[in-house]
Image (cartoon, rainbow, N blue to C red; front, top):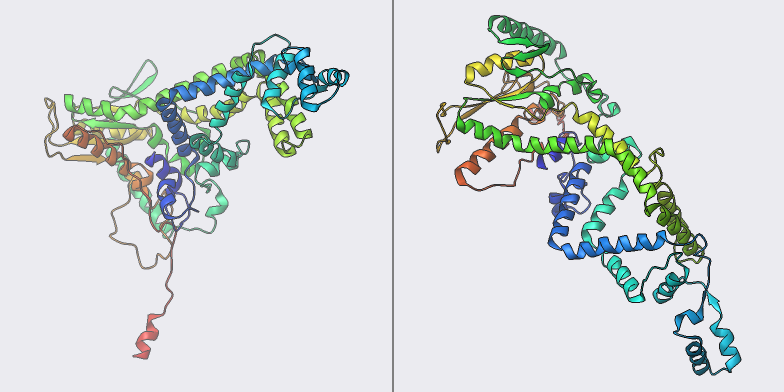
Length: 518
């Protein structure tokens, strides 16, 4: 989560007086910015799972109450909400009703009988609604007042549940039908793909940088010709040694020149050396998060395939007639002044489309599928089987040069105090991270030139150690090494943000005036 928050918000957001993480901001400034939509949803779902696991009976009662209400509303007749109820139905017999009105109102027998046959429309009291249900249901469902009261009490107990209120309040801010709104929410309110926000920026010494890149590429090409790279082709599939080259993928969201630079970071291999039982076990631990991501990708693909028939099943279920009857009830409550017109219009519109056929794009699962199809398109560009153990550093260099030709090399990790027979890491371990030169900051200069007066805020150029994932890879390595040494797991992660980010204050004080005064 810290990695996702840093990548989506802290590298691309303008400078703020408070951090962009909700956890820290809540302590510093209550008006601070929210977290990324992805982080908030993930945490909200995790908190909900924790709540369900800690109080399973409470949440089971909620589920049963919702199912019972759906079953009740699904069995209403078309005119159930307009059908009045005789007052006599609230008593065990007509005689008991007449006696009650006669003694309570002190009226004669004839008036008491007429009053007992009077009819009312139930809108306000739970007890009246309970009797009304028994009177108007097309099929006779045995629902006692106490049972109905228990259902409403269960639903009322969740009205102020902090987990649900927090989750719903955040989602209500985002307009999921608006692409820009979703992108802004993902990036904490700042759209990094909005070109208008980058107008007026210039990178100094562009000519010098271009000339340097040309010379560097010539050197790389010379080394590639000089180095005996083992690349081959078997059954029309390319390999670098035994490492298969991924086929070209249609990544529409990486069409821009700047974003295409990120391809090795999401699709490139991470090589480890030297080959040994210890490094194999290390690679296995490093692969765990990517396996969860691969499971997520598979689940999204399965959902996109099953969503249409599932939506049609919802249409055929009791949810469809129940939603239509609830709409009728909402309109009656609106007429009586119990509910506002805006709320009824919003809820009625949602319910009218929610359980429709899959051919309707506004139906529940089709709305969700619209988003998950976009996620599937993005995730197909990612490779989740990325860690490969090679025999030694020399082989790593050979494979890396070959993979770089295909933009499929991200990093190499070399452990120095390890041999092919090592089964454990030594107490003191030294390792190297070998990154492609384009994805780390240049070490040509020790400091900025005096002529550079703009902020170093271009995250693709000035923050390469963070943007390209070098620092986060280092943090992941250290985390596993610490766990191996201590036998304890740590859930903390690296969070990085340049502070003050995008805040450049240029001091234009003319120091020559100071010398003139002296």
